[in-house]
Amino acid sequence: MSDGDREVRRLSCYALGKIGPVAKRARPVLTEALQDEEFSVRLSAAFALQKIDPAGEAYVPGLTKAMRMGEGGVIVSVGRMQPSPTWAIPTLIELLYDRRPGIRRLAAETLGRIKPGTAAVVSKLQKALQDRDDRVRHAAKQALKTFQPSSNKTQR
Image (cartoon, rainbow, N blue to C red; front, side):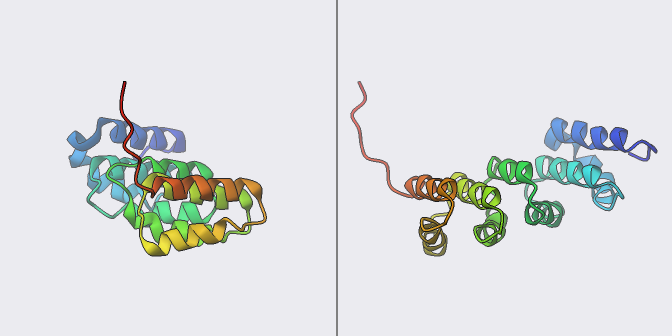
């Protein structure tokens, strides 16, 4: 983690994240890496901390900042996190109004994956149904479908 090569530091963070909760002893070093001069190292450290200690919150500011910067891969990855990243909901709602249609679309899709289902989220997604970009409208529509109770279908 103290190597002069940023790629070595980034991959070290990544490897620790792949190990998962067993690597809890690495939390201090990963927390320190959240301050690394290189964005890719900071991001890798944040993802590793989330995998090692999902209940902790040290990773939240870095991932929130990356989402606000328009890092689409981060937005998608946040939507796949377990447990459900409810901490990201305010930022995702904010991103529904981003100037970039691709970011608005990813925000709607990610809200659909997280499925917060609160009245505020449903209301914001309903407004996104009026977005000027058809991809955003489609993503909002699909996200809203995830909040509807599924019909009881007979399995064959």
